[in-house]
Length: 341
Image 1 (cartoon, rainbow, N blue to C red):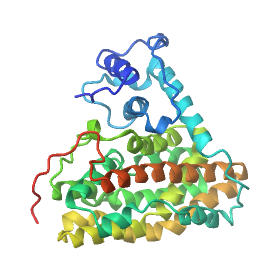
Image 2 (cartoon, rainbow, N blue to C red; image 1 turned 45 degrees about the vertical axis):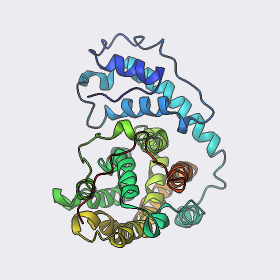
Image 3 (cartoon, rainbow, N blue to C red; image 1 turned 120 degrees about the vertical axis):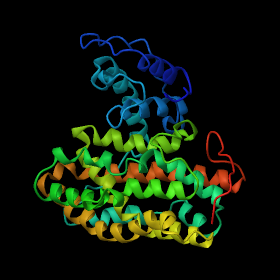
Image 4 (cartoon, one colour; image 1 turned 180 degrees about the horizontal axis):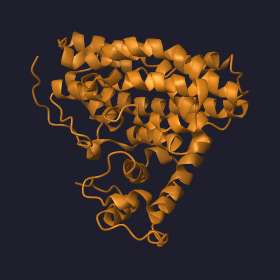
């Protein structure tokens, strides 16, 4: 079932996707679909949903959508116009990354970004959140976590040598080291189920706001374009550098609420351990190794990291504002069903 549209752009795209894909020689089929240029594209529900759906065809697809749409020239042309707005927004957010770091200094540059102040969602969840607020955060994160690691895996064929080896080592852990029940996406699904949520892929897309979708679209945008291979590596390096401590807080908050069962906390506990190991691997071996091979990518590495910090900070701020105002952070609130302790 396709999601509900959020404006004329997503309505036109979803209407087209409900039918057969145009032929390979028809690149003009979606030419008349207008793409907005909002002041804040990352808060635009219509744009972010449309872009998310276009990217999703490269992952598990959308129910009922002809698989031929994935490489439709008409859709790629429309996606390119959406990406132009998305990229312009990123460049407005991060107009200058500062001096490009050397391979030896990039880990310090990444850690400086990680140390910058940001709204404290993990602290809030640890100290104050209700179980229903936890459930809302899981719903928002499900847009990425149920396909965790997949966007970064697009970088593998674009790398070689030491940075590729480091990336593969990180991703092997993300995918459970060959054990499907330990895949991080599976552990996240277990957490959702433990808290009374539907873990089916895409089940909550209609409830997830634009700012959360923008954080996933950022990964897909960088990962699907070879020219942004430096940015997706910078994104992952910062991702791994800012994961261990927050995940420890998420686990502590669930335990505060009486949820100490493995199904509820295993996902967070796993990230405390795994990402503490991944941090040096991601910043020194992967990001540093890439810059050592190609110093011209140093600026892109920092750009990817800074874009992550900006979009995550905006999303976190929006969620915290909703919680502190006593309202739902979702487009449509969840039913408040009892969760077994």
